Amino acid sequence: MRALAGVSLEVEEGEFFGLLGPNGAGKTTLINIIAGLVRADTGATRVMGADVVSDYRRARRMLGVVPQELVFDPFFTVRETLRLQSGYYGLRCNDAWIDEVMHHLDLTAKADANMRALSGGMKRRVLVAQALVHKPPVIVLDEPTAGVDVELRQGLWQFVRRMNRDGHTIVLTTHYLEEAETQCSRIAMLKDGRVAALDTTRNLLGNFSGLELRLHLDRDALPPGVPGRVLENDGANFKLRLANYRELEEALARLREAGVAIREMELHPPDLEEVFLRLTGRAS
Amino acid sequence: MIGFWSLCQKEILRFWKVAVQTVAAPVLTALLYLVIFGHALEGRVQVYEGVRYTSFLVPGLVMMSLLQNSFANSSSSLIQSKITGNIVFVLLSPISYLEFFAAYVVASIVRGLIVASGVLVVTVWFVDLRLQHPLWVLAFALLGAALLAILGLIAGILSDKIDQLAAFQNFVVVPLTFLSGVFYSIHSLPSTWQRLSHANPFFYMVDGFRYGFFGASDFPPGASLAIVAGFVLVVSFLNLWLLKSGYKLRH
Image: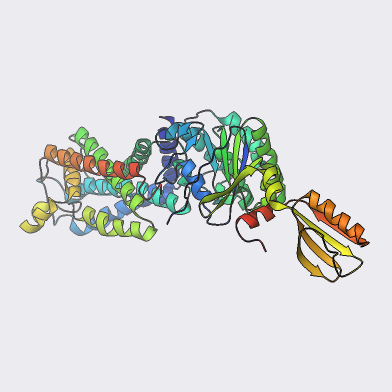
């Protein structure tokens, strides 16, 4: 089975990049190829210029990956886990940085607890800490907030944003589209193993999503010439899809000219979910 | 090298944290073998002139424990890591396949040697045992442990489930160990079984190891050592090829 077909994209240094797509689109396969866990049949993948196959040692030192699955080694404490992980990357005496990472991820109190004794959210924090022990310039977060409570989610994003401000490149896959919308400056949307869209978050929202206008009018019919597409109509309630703000102006002008009074109005700004659904062919 | 040492340290810590299960239990098992077989056969079987059966038995039990535990360490650690998924932490790191191989094998040799020393320490009080050629003992112990550690790693790579690994252990390792002359000299066997025993690599390890204690063996120790070394080389190449290709580890 072909998981990816002709994916070609470049993430710039220092970017906060989002990789979105429905289940089975190929996001995790792509990440696993970057991480060296899966070998691509053809093509090349480089991390900061280092080929992930021929120059794998350099590529992996540049990369910190937070896996999607909640995996852990039940034999060790949090601190032992992080020390061993540092050693795998050739680092000895890494305790100062380990302490700092644990502090930012609120793990200090659990430093000597066995991994088995931690809650799911805490285990997720350790996974993040493990990906950061070697201070990688590129951090890949594969669904980092799945099953994580709100408090941790906030703390995690704060920490990741700080890493990004400090120059770390972040690649994120998530099912929470609002997270991608607020965190990522650029987004690639995968569908059936191909890149369906690749643009800045702003452009994606502007180009694909449009506006959703909800109106409660003084009558049951829209006057002729109102632009957009009627998504729902229940008596005097209308839900319209407009392409942009120009159409909004036009719609309001047509209503005014026809003497239609607006009793209530709601405008929903562009939404990544809508982009996602339209690109993946699931929009209503 | 730090990567190798860290993985090796992790593997050693892993079994040491559950030493009751990984060290004390096999020592007790070996002691029970000595008590039961010694009680049943002492005075009825004499293999070498002037060597009591229990004395003959102890080096065999030490070697058997060493082999079985070296195999158990690498195989169980790898299959557990594969099943739970935490193998990913090693696979994501810049550790090379050579370091991976060396770390698992060295840690398994360490466990084999610790268990073997434990068996020797608790059994030596019951028998009259002298170390005549310690270097032979050490050479066979190291090569034997390495061979089984590598076989364990191969079994761990090839197995997807615990029961597949258990089948490898129960239908290959245990029969080869028990039929290697741990409890008897192959000279006491009918000629067909003697010939078959020579096809069993475990026989050379047990026989050569015993030579280090008694200065007597069923097969010349130098030839045994060469055969065991040959097996180590062959399985090492096979294992390294599997690791380099990423078979069942990197997809």
